[in-house]
Length: 288
Image (cartoon, rainbow, N blue to C red; front, side, top):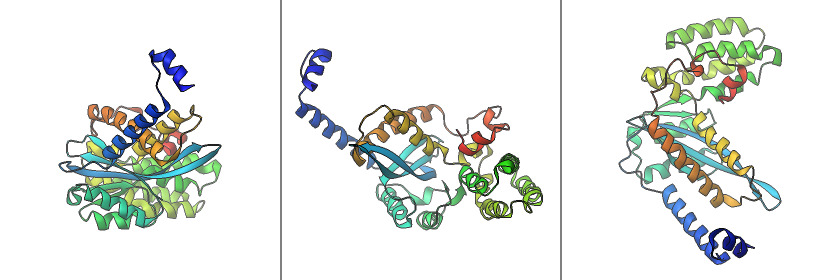
């Protein structure tokens, strides 16, 4: 079948062995890229998250969990630093991931901020491995956790209150809005208010950094876009098998995203964009 198709399309037959060798060459090239040296990369911020990628293998669907790190250079351009299979709930896996980045040449002392979800153990491990860095907790993840504790009929009001806090003009204003939020909602949804209060300081770290970069530092949505693009490209495939296949596709998506990032460094967003305005509840939660 392969020989017949290649003859019709290319005018010559391609054997299964040739396809296998090409696939092996591609896998080796992807692995070289994935484990490449990071010497000379001046990284000031890290965005880290763990994503579960659904892979169809034979007649079943397997889940390949992958830890992802995106770096922001001193010139504010971004690049994918690391992709490594691992459980995002395991502090040991995160430590191994961070140590791998540093063993490849990432200068830990240059990193001043890490943007991440509030996973158990992750922030502790990150601070231990990057001693000069502060932590910004992803506001979208926090919002989801808070709204999970809110009855459906109250979600819109609570989301509006959180949006005011997260998009305040200063840290002082954010705390003022939180005080109002607490007074308004503590009696009706005390567990939700407590959840937000416990994460508030880590959600407002971005105020210590240049205002033009605030939007990019609030959340890890860039990493979630990797997963969305991955799903879009695999929806029509009958079989995508194994960890190596996952890496190959992620490498392609990552390199494509990096081409876009080179033309759009962080801090260049115009403040008239819709994301800075009042947005629907679903968009705020999903950051679509």
